[in-house]
Amino acid sequence: MAPLSPYGTSEFDSRQFRTAMGQFCTGVTIITSLGADGAPVGFACQSFAALSLDPPLVIFCPMKQSRTWPVIEERGSFCVNMLANRQQEVSAKFGAPGDDKFAGVEWDPSPLGLPVIRYGLTWVECTVENVLDGGDHYIVVGRAQTLGEVLQDKPLLFYRGGYLSTEHPRVTPAQDSLSNLFTWAGGDEWL
Image (tube, rainbow, N blue to C red):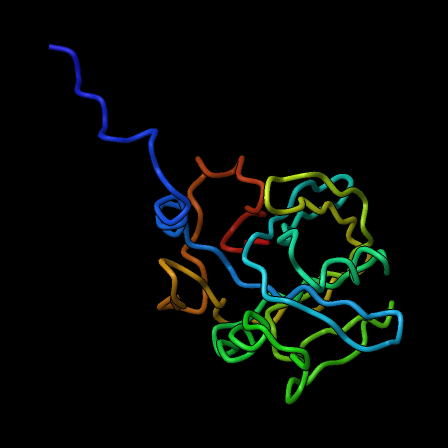
């Protein structure tokens, strides 16, 4: 007897697609930069990933309707702030519409002068390497220029439309069979 195929459908709408994609847990980042007037800009972004070790590249995907992306594109550089679990309010502030997202948020300038949000897990300062079309988003490839200090804390995670926390501050040691994963650096340290 032939095995049954898993149930699925090729007829779905954007809400159903969003629900399905919400089953994938992601970290939360804030992408920051500076406007031509020197004012800080930023937005919450969960569509971020490491792309390449050599050269050191990352990707993030801003919506095409984003008011912040054109400012970042014009500057040609950005900072990815990887949030810690205790930064849910920061994430919510940068994920909501509004003009002064930095009000009450502590930050320091990176070597390029870009906003580094305090108390995050780490940050990476990048220059824009390439921009590709990605449907209703852009796919931005950035070249890492500077890496921030790594803090030992729990990550802020987004899952099924809400925040999720890990139970332990350290990642369970990876199995040898996972050594080909891009983010696995050995032991229990992940990028």
